[in-house]
Length: 366
Image (cartoon, helix red, strand yellow):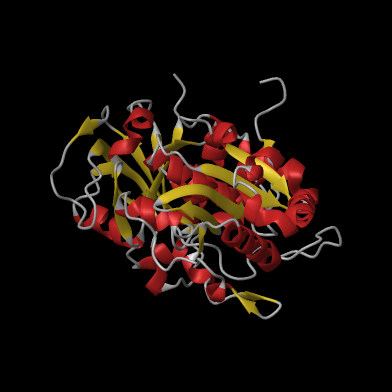
């Protein structure tokens, strides 16, 4: 049987704890048990430090996976474990930046946007294809023979991510992208992110609904109209979910609410990586598979094909329920046109009109 290669994620802190405890046991989250059961003795775990994006070591798996709660890591338990043997280990300064391998690894091929590769590194264990695994292994071996010292950000290395409680256990929740991330110029974009966000907020308010804007966007404005001044804008969300779910929901671009019920959630994919917005929605579904919120992706007309391609990736299509089944698409032009047509009678219109103008994201024929 051929050896397989698997991603094993660490923060700088969990890597140091792993080494300090003998480097003989590697662990994963409880929710990764199904994947961990596919890992076999003799397989290699390729160790990757997340916040500095470097490969640092190779571990050989020496046992089937088992459950153990004995303390190794301070901040989280990682109870799904393997006995391992340290095969190759680099000093952090000579560890290999993943971007140094971007011309060789398949995870970097045919990406749009270019940063979509980072989605591969959101959970472990995760299987590399055979060629990629061998490339990474060889690169680590070469670095042992001919180390190249590269400085790294020690604050990032030792950073302890914020964690939140959820039905899946303790999880991290990524923030939204920084202002301007992934920004591109396009003559085909007929509106700005702020305009669409303001339009959705104002429309929801005019429909007589409560509205919510992503917590870190409250100070934004469109043509001098400040989001926080919109009537019916809520300062707090209903707290019927666990801590991690609430944290994810409050970072979604726009919500429409009726009382304490969230009627619709809108993610606006202007020029930021579509993949990252979808990851936020998939996190929400993973934590709350029975959630009853209508999900919408709003994007420029020119990005329609990209949205459909990304949302139907196996990562999202195999969720239960599948993301393409419960998330719909609305183009900028469609949204602006439809709202303009009903602008003078919005108070007589039901909020369900948004469903009628949205397009299913499921592949044709389903």
